[in-house]
Image (cartoon, rainbow, N blue to C red):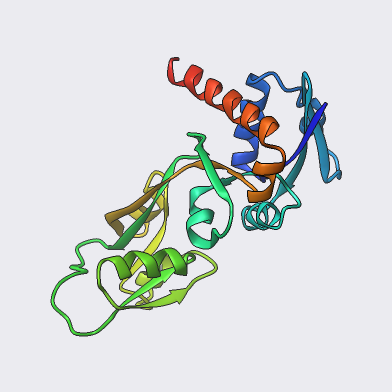
Length: 217
């Protein structure tokens, strides 16, 4: 029997990942029972997935370091701190987007010689985005509600994840540019892809079949 270890991002992506694996024929009952266990086995035919539940940044760390063969993590985390691994598949769930938002009515690009100040939880994404535009900006890292930065006058705009935009509207902000679409991605450790190629490619093919069936519904 083949055995792979996979890290799943806790929360919303975890739930959708389990739904996907169940649809693919894996027995996920152990994973669905509340417990304090840290490792769970989900099984289908001759493949066992040893499953780790982790925060998104840790999923990347586990896959990059090789303690997990695969991981499911949001594109946002990959863009912010992705390093050495294969990003093999867009799984199509957990959809949202990175966006630049400002106070409603503000002219963000109106003539000024001062660097714009951007509040964000994602400094690398922000830096790379404005570098591509040839703009120098001052980035302020925010850990909590990033919407407060322009409201309090700390920043001229924010870069954040937007799903419906309701929170922005309720706080007098509006999206002026979409930076990148976000969804869950399947990532694979570099060495595992060589050492466990057959099992990993089989799982990737099963995921592709699942996505094709979902698309046809």
